[in-house]
Image (cartoon, rainbow, N blue to C red; front, side):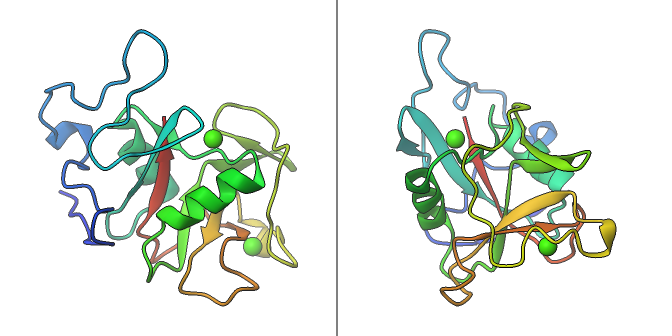
Length: 168
Ligand SMILES: [Ca+2]
Ligand SMILES: [Ca+2]
C-alpha cells in the first residue's frame, strides 16, 4: 500500500493512488473526442493536462504507474515555456521531481520515444554518474537558482524521491 504525501496544498491529489486502489468511476479518463478535459486539480497548458503526484520513495517505475493510473505519463517538456509551467507545479519544498526522460542507449528519449528537442540540463549534467543515471529529474524550488528548474540525470531508483509531474 502506498501513501500519499501532502506535498503541497492543492497539488497532492487525494485521488492519486495506484490503479489497484482506485475507484473505477472513470473521472480521470481522457475524453474520446478531442483532447483531454482537465479534471480536479489538473492544470491546463497548451491543450494538455498536468498534475504533480507523490508517494514516499517514488522510483521512476512507480512514477510511471502513478501517472498511468490517471491516464497520464511522466511529463515530456518541449519548450522553455512548458519547463517554466512544470516548474510552477512543483511543491515549494520540492528538491526534485521525475520527468519522462530516460536514456535509450547513449541518447535520451521522452516516454513517446521522441528525441528531446528542448533540454534544460543543469551545468555539468547529464553526467551519468557511476554509469547508472538512466532517468531524469527537474530540480525543485527548494534548491538555488542555478539548479532549480534545471534537469539532472539520476538513477531510476534514486532514494528519497517523492514527486512526479504527470501529463496527459
Ligand atoms: Ca509536454
Ligand atoms: Ca546526474
